[in-house]
Image (cartoon, rainbow over all chains, first blue to last red; front, side):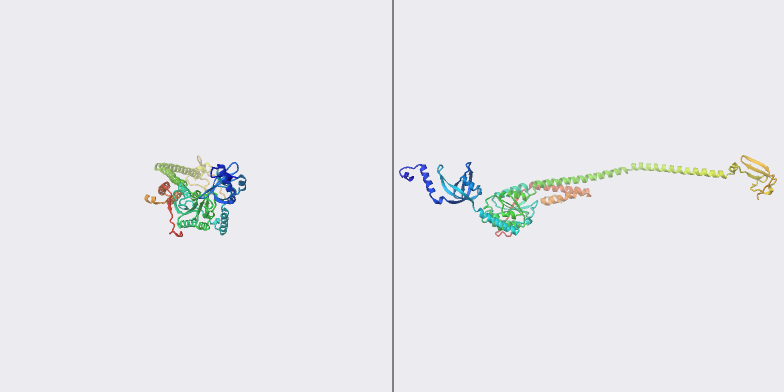
Length: 411
Length: 73
C-alpha cells in the first residue's frame, strides 16, 4: 500500500520516504538482534530515565538509546566515557530526526571478565610464590641522589614526575629509561628499562609509572614477566600506574605503590629541598649557639680568674700582710702580758716565801732569837752552864736582856 | 682545606662534614682557637650547601639500553 505512492513521475513526501526506510530496516532480521562492540562516548542521561550514548571505533560511530526499563535492567554495567562495551539490541529509525539508532536492551563489558579472571589467576599464583610478600619490601631511601624513571618518553606521566621532582628535590639526578607502556611490545620494553636502571650501582630508587587508561591500556603492568622483573629488582621500586582506583600486579610486587605518577615522585622524595634548607639553618644556629656558649664560658672563667687576681694584687697583699702583722703583734702583746702576769705571780710567791724565811717574820709570830750577851752566840738549846748567864732575847720590835735564874733540861 | 676544595664538595659531603662540625662544637673542653676554626669552617660549609640548594636544577640523563637489555656496563 505504501509502495503504491511511489512512481518515477512524482515525488514522495519525506515522511513517506522515511517510513519506507524504517520498514526496510525493521524487516531485516540481521538488524533486529545484534551485538555491537565499541567505545562509549557522549553519555547523556535524560530526565525521562532514558540513556543516550554513542559507541564508536576508529572507522564509525553509532547512536544508541537505552530506554528507562532497559536501563534499570543493566545497572550492573556502568556506562562511562572511554570504556569498551558490547551492546545488544535492534536498529530503529527515529523518524522525526531522520536518524537511525540502536535500541539497546543489554550491555556487556567487553572482554573485561576474561581479563579480570586472568588477573585474579596470576595474582593468586604469584601471591602463593611469595612474590608479593610484605617482608620482601625494602624501605624507600629518605634522601635520594639518583632516581630512575621507567615510563613513556612522550607521556604526561613523565612530565608530572619531572615537575614534581624538580619542585620537591631539584638536587637529584634523574636516570630516564624510556619505554613503551602500552601494547604488545610494552612488557619487553619495561623489563629492559628496569634491567638497564638496575645496573646503575648508586641508583637509590626506581619509579615505574604510567598515566591513566583503560584496563587494556594498563594490561602490560599485569604481565607476569614484568611483575617478576619488578619483584627481582635490586633497586627499590615505587609504582605509580594509572589513577587512584587502578591496581595492577606490579603494584603488589613493588616496594611501594603510589596512586599516581605524581604521587610516586612525591613518595620518592620524602625530604624536600625546603626541609634540607631548614635543616641547614638549624645547624647554622646550633653552631652559633655552641660557639657563643664556648665564648661565654670562657668569659665567665676569665672573670673569675680576674677577680682572683684582684684579690692577690700587691696592694691587697700588703693590706693583708699589715693585717697579719697587726694580728701577730697583738698576739705578741698578749703573750708578753701573759708572761708578765706569770712573772708577777711568781715574784709574789717568792716574796712570800722570802718573807716566811725572814727571821723577823718568825719573831712576829712569837718566836725569839736568844744570844749570849758577850759572845753574840746563838743559843739554840738549853744547857746547864747557862745558869746565871746574861742573854739577849731578840723579839719583834726590840730585845730583852735577861739573866738565867733557873735551867731545866728536858730529859 | 682551601675554598677551592670546598667548592668541589657535593652537597652530601659538605652536609656530612657540617653535621660533624656542629656536633664537635657542642662538645666542651675544646680550645677556643679550635672552636673558632671549626665554626669558621662550618659557616663556609653551610654557605656552600645553601648555594648548592639554591642553584640546584634537576639533571635528567637518558639511560642507554642495548638490544638485549641485559647488560649495561
